[in-house]
Image (tube, rainbow, N blue to C red):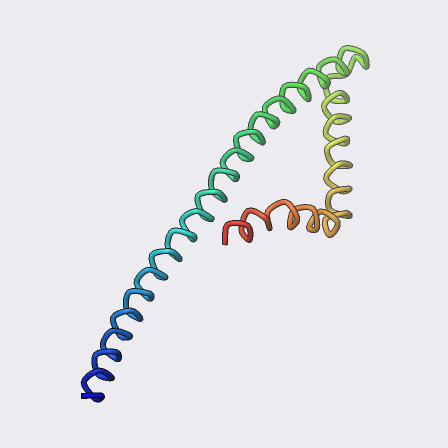
Length: 116
């Protein structure tokens, strides 16, 4: 009699364990989906805003180059000065690239870890 009860309890525990594992797997899939979607939507938003900024910078650069061309009476010097400005900015980004990692990690870490 006690053996039958123990056997039934064991079978019930096995069924509960299977149910728990299946539910845990589904929960994990939902969490991964949530984190990925949050990351993708945030990344897409940043890319679209970045593209807008690139187009604005492009047209401002062309305008500044043409304005400098008129001031300096040299078509080439205006564009060379604007290009030099971008080379300087790029060099500064390269020099301080390690300092950019911290803010980027702080920005994107909550997107991943808060979702878990």
